[in-house]
Length: 297
Image 1 (cartoon, rainbow, N blue to C red):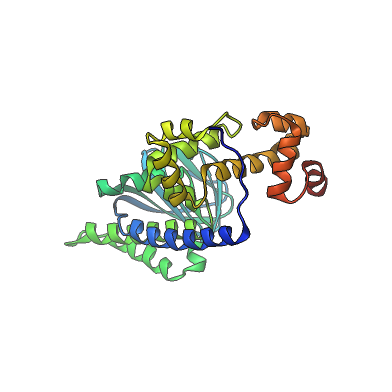
Image 2: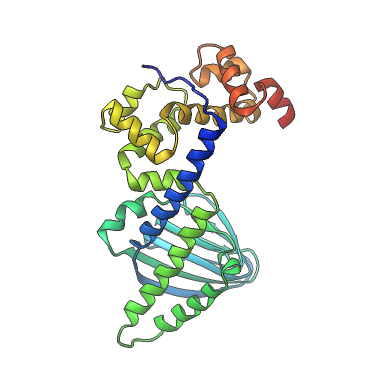
């Protein structure tokens, strides 16, 4: 069967949201408990304006800007950081930090300890920025100072102490990333069920594709009924409603940024006519495509 849009009532939507928030909070608590890294390297760099420092090791890297501001170049995408920001790069290769003005940066390299947590690490984005982490949670700054002290000495238990401190800071950054609404649902779904995550990724890569429940279930390696039930439990919505919402967000981009006509956007998103696309758009956005584009401009 083809996936079609079926709008939910407000009451049903509110119930799904409430249940999803509770589930995400509980799941996040459990997942953070599985995070554990070993600190392999640590350095504190004082950089003058325009000066830079190169990092050549691959793996998981973090950078915390103690003062000033810097640009991180080559880490998948360029990132600008200011004092108080924390950057976690789970799968980074060689990259460079360049100071915009005088800056102090604490950096370290991490290895995941538990194999059970590898799916969690794999589901993290390539670039995770916890903006203002040490300003919003100033008690963490003292942990960075303790990390520097522990790394500068070799006492019994030093490796354990500094690794646990680094894990606490990284876990706080992940928590802040989730709480700030940076696609936590998709991340949690990936960790909970990578098969459902594959179906979601397929829809996101090609929202205009001729998706059916059956074709998505095949990607998820499940029967149609199991896929539908599991998808609703994890995402809080049906595959059809999720796909429609995805198409509407893509439609906004096509209309606004790419300046496509309504008919062109409808064709790109898999609708048989611009009228069908317009009906779905009005139902989800509250205005016709033309009216929404005019308001956006």
